[in-house]
Image 1 (cartoon, helix red, strand yellow):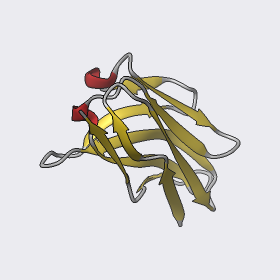
Image 2: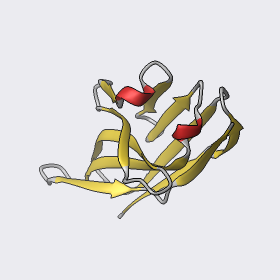
Image 3: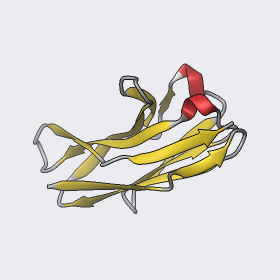
Amino acid sequence: QVELVESGGGLVQAGGSLKLSCTASGTFFSINTMGWYRQGPGKQRELVATISSGGGTNYADSVKGRFAITRDNAKKMVYLQMNSLKTEDTGVYYCNVDVVRRLFYPTDNYWGQGTQVTVSS
């Protein structure tokens, strides 16, 4: 079993910054893509950013230039640096990873429990 634990959420004023962290634990062979998703009030869950095992990144248009996703493979962690936050960035942020539990096994997908980010005006 793989467990994801997020941290770093909180309340911040518009224009401020927050950094989210997610740690993967458990027994597995490798981690492929890692990412962050969010779900705002009354909205569907949406992609924020992803990062591949090789470091390639992908961002939602709404966060390009403001957010940066990074990973530390040795620590099995993924981060989301959020700058110039806007009220519309408010929501629950979820960590998501694709894990290969054993060599030659197919990829399994896991979600964290979510961390609340609230941006006030």
